[in-house]
Figure 1 (tube, rainbow, N blue to C red):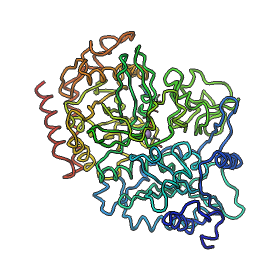
Figure 2: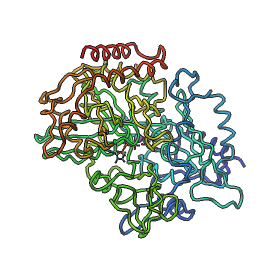
Figure 3: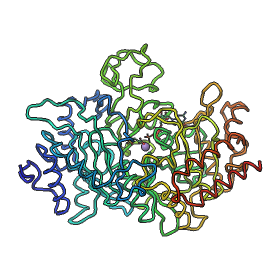
Figure 4: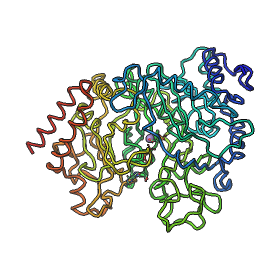
Length: 607
Ligand code: GTP
Ligand code: SPV
Ligand code: MN
């Protein structure tokens, strides 16, 4: 069959000849039963949802409690990003390495052409035009995802600005990033479908030089919603390097003090280390308010006034469900009250969702994420630890009015962080930009369920970008250093390192976290205004005990020491581990970072 004979391919709702030719080419290769160009309408969403309910992919939740909400349980082997199957295929290996998987682009194209031949047989091929960032903003960029998954198509409708307005904006020759996704589960004539089609063989492939994405075999979020990590981080980081801006794995929040002074803060924490929670925090200190702008990704560029402006390229939150409760993140719960897709949570007997941490006690009659009755005695969780909700950002009670401002918001402070049971203080201020880049480059964090790596094991995750940087990480460090030279030092955001996850000898978190993290943000805001004290330590500036607002908290002296003291012996050990990590980058590692390491060691020795 020639592509043009495929039902729905023509007439195309666009005059963009390049786009039409590409869609024809992918249709000819993947051989779907039909093509559907997504317009982003409610009617379209309803039709796709009905189809997915028919297939058993989606279940309607109790619509009186959760209007517009649906539930999906994935294949048990398709629950997280697959970093071992994720590739950056630059022409030269060194341009992707050493922290990314690399494969020769010519060989990879040949392999994928084979895998994609007929891969959509029996399925609908959705053409999903999307904008990362507010429609028409100078900070935004466009893409088109081709996918044979209705679940992906409707999730893209939540997570991005999706549909006809994007095609209209693209016109006849607008630039877009082409992204092809398949479940890798073609249907033979008469073959019955399964609720969550996927393939054991998975390939998440990026061609940074030509800015293309190809994804095979998975239906899970970060592997399949290609606007998110694949485009807005891996491809966009390359665009950002070339064009002098930053594409980062960061939340964005607005913090307003009791005098009405607002600050904008961005923060990079590794996956499942607290971005969504901080983005939606409800301060426990009186008079302070926090509003949400983004929870996962920030695109940042210097404005004409020399300040760094950030937009959230996404339109929704793809958040971790377990651990989310009224006490820890009531805003997230309110956001997911309607129009939300839940994946791999547990189901209650009365058609609602549940996960560990939502309530103290699991309700009776739960169905676990694998579709079996939940047995509390088994020790197995009812929800998968990486169960997620996809909810529209506009529904967040604390969404800031300026969250869609096309010019972005001016960033005052950038936080780096990770999950560290030991060594790393609650908060540390960098001495200057270069020192902050050094801090960001050496972040280590304990593994989580967001990717298939060892949970709890410490790994370096510089700038929380280890799985998301689309080019050589040494060059990425150099790019960050160079950004510091693009404006006056006084206009640069100040850089901080935070750690909410210090544990005591009994293995319990010392810091209460969540809403109480506002206490740390308060110190940072007051530092920016020149109103809070700090002490210099070998690793940076930490709050004096008086400077941190601890009113109403019961922390022992020992707890405070754990949180704020810098142990020279522990840090001598920490610092001694950095050279091994840096060595892998060879001459791509900027000399300035070696100098920072030498300076840290000298400060520790002098202490
Ligand atoms: P990704 O969506 O994977 O990028 O994750 P994220 O960085 O947005 O992490 P998220 O806010 O979803 O938090 C992940 C887990 O960490 C959840 O189980 C939270 O309950 C927990 N968490 C978040 N903030 C805190 C905190 O301040 N203290 C403690 N102890 N746990 C936290
Ligand atoms: C993360 O893992 O950092 C996420 C979820 O935000 S995913 O979309 O799968 O990347
Ligand atoms: Mn993330």
